[in-house]
Length: 112
Image 1: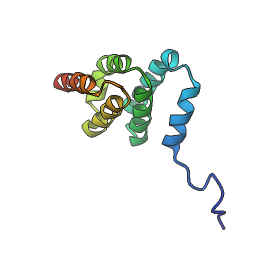
Image 2: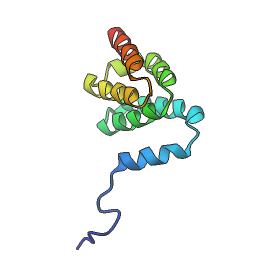
Image 3: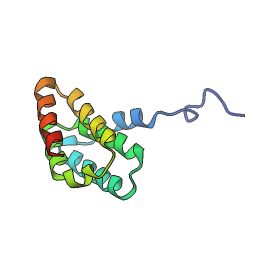
Image 4: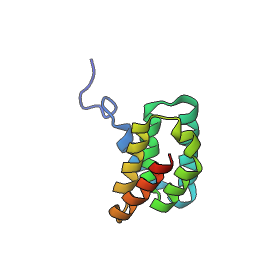
């Protein structure tokens, strides 16, 4: 019988990852994390990797995340467009300059 008060019965791993990512120096390790996750998406294309990429990209400064998207455009283009849109939406929501970020994302999607 399962104990309903056991913290491991129901876990939200994305929320745990959002909390854990702030332990790292995101400016130093964030781009490496993002590129690692993109490599995993290229190899396995598991939906949860897209969720993890959203978390990392939201934590990064917007321009740095956008640079990574441009650098990895070829691999990301092969993935699910809806998931890529969700990553970009999280990046826009994570910035203080939503209108400018939205315009930059629109420009990015024209190239994709």
